[in-house]
Image (cartoon, rainbow, N blue to C red; front, side, top):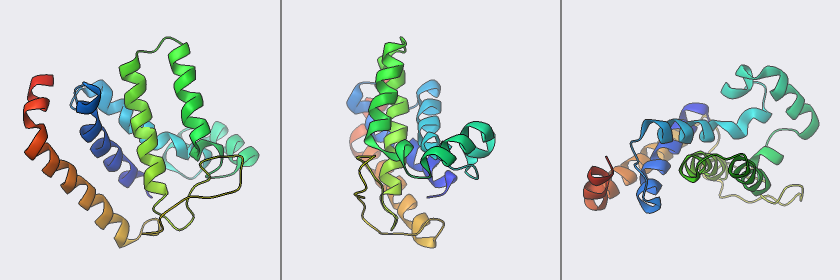
Length: 164
């Protein structure tokens, strides 16, 4: 998926998930971390939004590991979470970043290429519903946002209000 889709999916996923974690879905720090997490896996692609902003790191990762390798795996999520918690980051902050990161992986699993979730194993997992940048990608993102909005209106309004 494209960067803008990852951002929207990351925000929607955070809004849906935060109340389950007893965290505010509209806290600006948590939203920013969810957005950062939603873009972070593409650091392995020098032409991605985050790759262009971290060109030397992105180029090195791409040369060593390729795109949709380590950074698009469960290994990366577990390692990142463990590293941040060990470094003393708060669990809520790490949760927001991890939710965004996981939203990126889930969105990329909807493309024909799928993901190597158990990297370095070669097996890929996915449900090929859309190609990156296709009109179907937009339809999926809009459907997700509508679903989260509907869920929030039906079940989350009181929870969101009390967390503010």
